[in-house]
Amino acid sequence: MNKIAVIDYGMGNLHSVAKAVEYVGRELGEDIDVVVTADAAKIAAADRVIFPGVGAIRDCMAEINRLNVGQIVADAMKSKPVLAICVGMQALMNRSEENGGVDCLDFMPGDVRYFGSDLRDESGGRLKVPHMGWNQVKQTRPHPLWRDVPDNSRFYFVHSYYVQTENQKIVAGVTNYGAEIVAVLADDNIFATQFHPEKSQTAGLTLLRNFLQWDGGV
Amino acid sequence: MGLAKRIIPCLDCDNGRVVKGVKFVDIRDAGDPVEVAKRYSDAGADEITFLDITASHEGRDTTIHTVEAIAGEVFIPLTVGGGIRSLEDIRTMLNAGADKVAINTAAVENPEFVRAAAQRFGSQCIVVAVDAKQVSAQGEPPKWEIFTHGGRNPTSLDAIEWITRMVDYGAGEILLTSMDRDGTKTGFDLALNKTASNAVQVPIIASGGVGTLQHLVDGVLEGEADAVLAASIFHFQEFTIEQAKIYMAERGIEVRVT
Image (cartoon, rainbow over all chains, first blue to last red; front, top):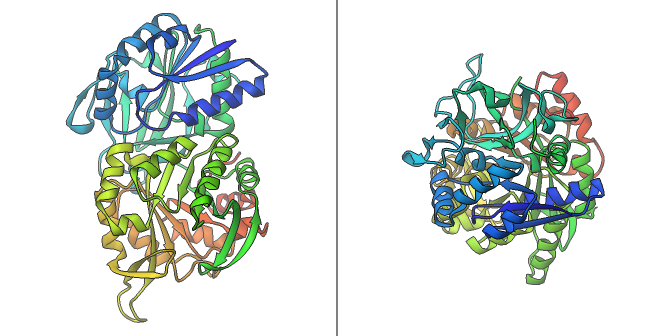
């Protein structure tokens, strides 16, 4: 039995993630048990943990702090594969510019910045914010979760803020929107995506399948 | 290379069946929504929009089950619209597996609802659907007003002002349908789309009037739409999503090729 816990802190649509993981498990023919929960004991009992998040960071961090999710994530990060998605990834950083500035969990080095209200492409064309839709992800280093995912595959993004880090060693994928930005951070047993694998069809499902089989090593 | 322009097939559903009307009347049956959504997703659709036009209360339960079934099979973004009138309705649809909801009439009746929805669930899942009709005469500067209840009720609200206001209130995306063009297969209202796209920072989905693949290209290149929505050209197999993507790519539009 492969137990997957999707951490539920009341922010947004976690059902998509759970449904995608269940689907991938069925395809693998594996016995998968997906729980959507904030219960520390259940998450501690899981083999793998998914830390999703949507919406505004202030509300997310308020719920994370209220439900002591930071400790739960920290515990999971010590011992098992963790996949953070979108605002879940942003919550792992030091601080976000959103909502006038919000302190985050500081589990990974870097900050979360706004795209700006006058974002332009290389030829000066106006870029909409949020960055919403399918963009290509360049794999900047090998990783077990990239197995069978062609380089430059498109994934589904929806965000107005992006992660910036000084530590290029933990960047595993980038995309281009106005500038080259972080699409994936990977450090030991943590894999964090700005995009939504659960909404990224074949490429995303392949990544989730890899996560279900990942032992947390690199 | 960068962000792809999206092709979004739209499933108008009545009592659990995909239908498509011309100018919001004269409904034709186009199949089972789960099968249709799966077919489109496999063919490379970038998102699915599901608009529920069921009137009855019992029909709403059918809709929720249909959304659940689609979300269990289709792993691309799913927007659900039609009859979204309360935060509870939004919660229900998100729990059923929708990624975004489209709010139309309820936004006009109570604009603060959009603000509350964006605050509660985040702008990324709040789409405001706008049905616009040109009200200026030929030769006058173009002007559009919005209509509600499937295009039946005028509101005297200026469409561009309304869209700007909805974005201020937290709408993360605008689904913009031309009532003049919907079902006519004569192409998008390009002036409407371009004006709206330049007025706001969020993506605009152009809707209403697609009859040829060139219309999709025009919507992006001239209408400056971020995504193009179409129903009947795909439902009745006049064109496939693949054909649409190849056609757009050949004309220099960046699309997701699967």
